[in-house]
Image 1 (cartoon, rainbow, N blue to C red):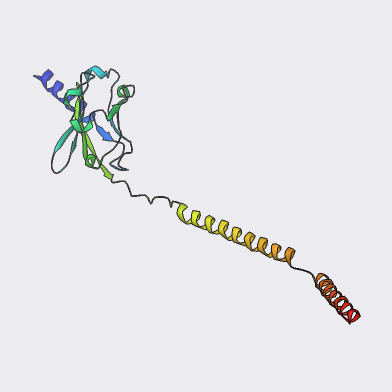
Image 2: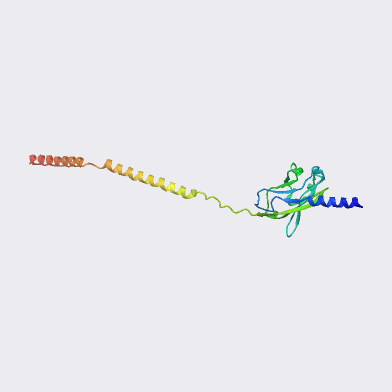
Length: 207
């Protein structure tokens, strides 16, 4: 009888020292990003992953979804909810140290909820939970695109303007080249007057 009482007392003491905690009670992230959720639990010198049973789930007001499950140190993928398939990875190496680290990738807004992990060992049982809030990605303003049409029109106008200037200059040069100078005009007038004077002299001599 005394042995049974001592055994019950020892079991209660051991169970009372087993604790599961979260390293962070609340997480905030944007959709399409990744996040790491972490729990810690009490270990002993002879703690073995083969003796662990871990069950993690996500709870909302509308549903409960299985996030992750380990039985005897073996992951049970069949129990995982379709919502998390292919998006949850875990660090096996740190499990022996009393740390459960889950990496959730490509977050969705429907991943928001309360995340609870229940850890059962041969020396104790406990659970802890945290809150994850996933917000929608903010709409980023699109970069301003250069107005290629207006630039093209401006370039065309510049070319046409330069062409018009060249045409005007060319016409002016032609006019200047073919326009007789004052000397040429005076020479032409002198020739005409001399010719007419010669004609008059001939006319008078015949008379």
